Image (cartoon, rainbow, N blue to C red):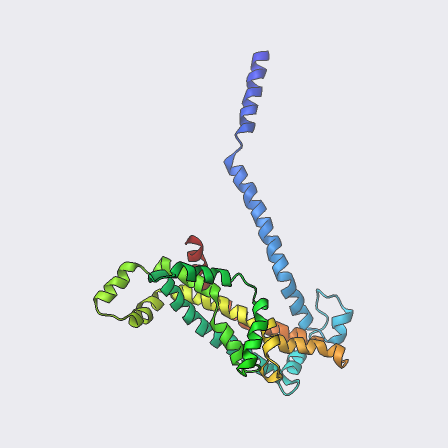
Length: 301
């Protein structure tokens, strides 16, 4: 009887030492699912609050539950946003599209060309140049704003579109991404074959390299667009006149009028903030295929 009990005990000990892999996998999946749900709720909570707040008037904004609707005044708020100060909100929107669109497009082209040169050409100081690129995108942009302002002041570019466009054209992090994409997608053999056929370097870049780096270019453009669209400290420093302001600076100015002149424009600020995220959402949806593939390619590299 004792021998039988000892065997059962040993059998139970072996089972405890060898847990079921399927059960452990299910436990890990549940833990991951709970984490993803909490992270999604944390990310979507401010967006939900913004949507609810944009549908309220001034009274409902301060006297009702902040997480639920209190009357539908969204259309009235939108009408007021587009007509306040002769429709200056539309001018700010156009400026944001100019800075983010043109600047990101030019910056993407420059980044792809630079990344291609670092990845597929041998020249003295190549490692040092790449080290400078990596080190420069580790510097916060806020530390570079004052030197940019002083430099633009000397060449009379302050309060002009060029004060925003020129910094957007140079993005070291985009150069780093372009180099990674080039190494992963552009083989040496293809470039040598094109040179043997008599193609010049410019033709190789524009006809072959750019087409092969469509995914990487779309990813670089999307990241640069979002970064420029959300920029605040740089336009606050180099743009003075309200006709050149971006959406972020314009909405910030509206929010400050409550302290300066006693005019409460909180409803307009919240409605404008909701409108300001629509272009980025559309951009993310339109380019999600390139963005997903590009991020996966960079991770594998």
